[in-house]
Image 1 (cartoon, rainbow, N blue to C red):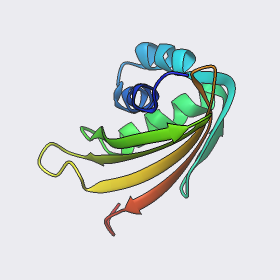
Image 2: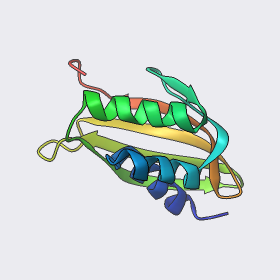
Image 3: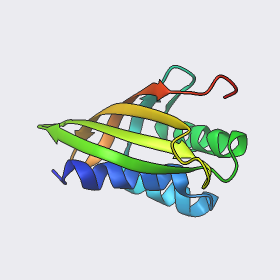
Length: 120
């Protein structure tokens, strides 16, 4: 298995990619075909739905960027923390995601929001 940090960095790259064609290619490289994503605000299954979720977050928070804070894992399980915000407040939103990996690709991601401003 790739290192936890490498897999988490590819995951963050998907969320930051604004070019739709490039983002779909990154999703295909880093997520299994039937992969699932769920957090308190949204859920999706498969590449097209995951791409739609990412696109919706980018539309709601234009100019915001994700950054990886930490990643670790064992076996096929990953845990990684991230932050999201504009350049002048890049940790406006924070979260921790838990993932299951198969052959170096994401099979399942469960996201948790650790810090969310009231206006978000």
